[in-house]
Length: 195
Length: 195
Image (cartoon, rainbow over all chains, first blue to last red; front, side):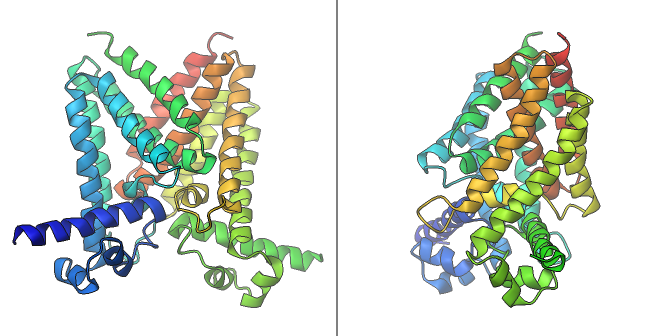
């Protein structure tokens, strides 16, 4: 695969992630995604022979990896810095888009798969949530939080951020993100004070 | 409006809430909703002359009122009982549907409105989230939690439940709901122990 091909393919994946985060899974068609990415429609079938499920799964993984990379970097300064960076990512996404953009992983998680079997996109969403939880839990454990509490608190952080982003989009204020951040900060501080 | 008319109209609203909670806003068309409710297509235009936005807003309010009613009743036994009932509602919805159904209010919150102005459905979603937060916060205050902490904790409960439901649907396990419940239980207990 040449460099040009790689970047055209990537452009389509990035565009799909953006569309998912704005309009949801059902409104994200391959045709619209190609248009959004400025790519000819044929190229999406060339790059994603398994169709929309494949493209959606890659878009979910792309978004998941981007957030995980920033989270991993911030967690080097400890769980409090990691939490701050994680919530700041979501706050920026919501505020910079004037409350029009949210989380593409959540968008995929909440729509019933068409086929009986579990879709590849839903599987990718589950893996992204797992990764974010695992990164936070590992950092909490390294800073003295007992394993069960670390896992629970990591799940609470990811769940609360996802819910808060959606609520902020409806309420058109960051009040819920602010409230969630204050509560989670206090929890993470208390859970790592023993160290 | 006769009783028959009322119940046919209600059937369409209930059906729309169900479709939103399974398939999201974009996949919920008036045509599909009428079919889902066993109503002739013409009746939806008769009952909802302002179209899909009006029907969606009513479906969101219907779902919101149902959850609020159960929450209000449980909160008479205090915030811990209220939290337990609130999370149980979401757990039942997710588990009984084999991870296919979530929250219709969230589904409406995360899709970009088509028009420039704020849609009536998004406004209804914001009001439902406000109502759930206000009910929890009032009960916490009545049981000794200082107002600012009560508001933050109520926001955390609603946000975490919304996020957890979506994550459980992707992960096909209730692990995140279980973790969130353990953490929130401890928080609510600590916040009301002063009384």
